[in-house]
Amino acid sequence: MCRKFQSFLERAGFAKNTVSAYVETVRLFLARYGRVSEKSLCDYKVFLLEHYKPKTVNLRLHALNKYLEFLHMDTFKIKGVKVCPI
Image (cartoon, rainbow, N blue to C red; front, side, top):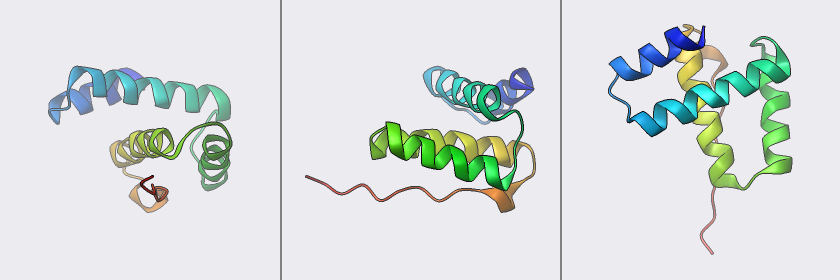
């Protein structure tokens, strides 16, 4: 599945580093949760918020949202978190 997602991103014109980051995010998500569901997406967002800074959380959520778009599961898209400037 990750190969097809990678091809989807490449065809969409994403930069090489972005493609790598997005594919890795999806790989780690699937390794942790096994499948995409509303619960697994919510649990992952909580996990990210507990372990990462908001910018990293948003990067990972954006990657997952692209994956959901690839799967035609747009209704499951996750909102990002607000990043407050210092």
